[in-house]
Length: 207
Length: 139
Image: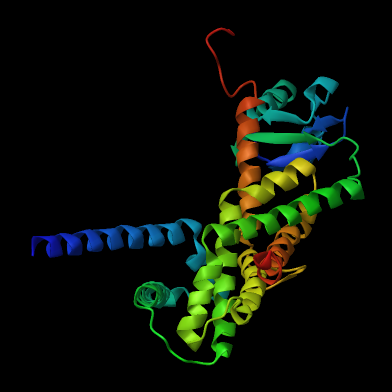
């Protein structure tokens, strides 16, 4: 009798180098027969090799092929994404504190200089002097009553925009930065799905 | 007479272009949607639009007419703070559009430390600005 198995691939999994990927690693399955399910789960799909480097794409057709080979009369219904991104996690290099501090300083000094150049570029000093004169009626070369709150506001505005008060968040919603990170990751995933998957594209020369 | 009409026409079209450009700039950076999202006041977005428009008109009027108001200088404190927050949000929105942080954090492998990197930029802006006004302008 033919049995129906519902199969949904995970979007992204992480494995160690030289690991063998089994169906249980990359897919969720639903079927009535528990014994069959256990045997299905232990079907090996792929062994990670050195030349794969960081990313391997396992296509749903590859999973189907493996299932059909072992269990010819199982009816597989797939749901969800049609490939899984397998990320090979090598020993993580600890980022040295010095390196991080250097990048931090780079950003710090860079943005300080950028904001100074911006002020000069838009002649902000002159605008502030005029504003001071308009409001108080007096001349003032350094309108610090305006400039110091302005400088602090600059930082507050950036933090507000990114919704972070250091570690504490102002509300539950993801900040634009987190959304941006997510979208960037999605674009990268989309790219590797197309480019690392041999089944995704077919050119004229390779037949 | 003709030259008057011509001046009016040129002035009006120039204002139209600058106003449209200003609104387009704000829209691209998405600062106002961000504020409504933070304060949960999406319904009031029309009022915020009017705030921007009236602000631009007042700014234009004041900078062209040079009135003198004879108020205390303490009025400048909230004005300075507000304009600082506004410029800060613009700057933050600009770095976000340019995708600086995601790429940097990804390349360096410090996705969990991204807030610390962000703080580098925030402190850099505040310190740079204070340095500029307190020291740099005198030299």
